[in-house]
Amino acid sequence: MHLAAQSVRFLLDSVLQQKSLAIDIRQQGDVNVEAVPGETRQVLLNLVRNACEASSRPGSHVTVTLTERAEDVEVTVRGSGVGHRPAADAGAV
Image (cartoon, rainbow, N blue to C red; front, side):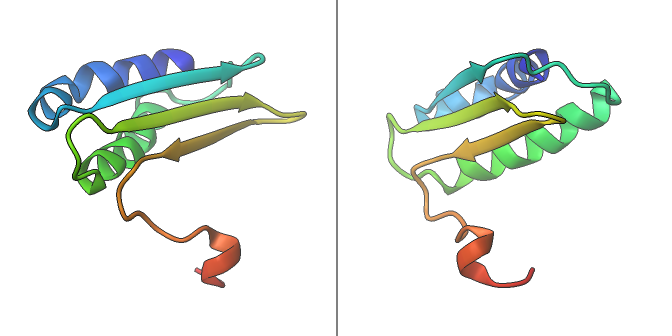
């Protein structure tokens, strides 16, 4: 997952420079997963791109946190934009 996150940062470099944004990638534990690399990267790219597009202030950060869990990896994308309410607050989606 960490390599996918680095790839996403590279793919979004022009957007990051244009909007004066930075992506911080944080890793907690072993975040290797068995998955199709291109599909994993595409999902992560969509989430991070959405966070970048919602960030309106120059100098803002988008943080991607990859956290090892017992059976999987938790991926959290946080930005300074308006974003979406967490699922617990939003009800069934």
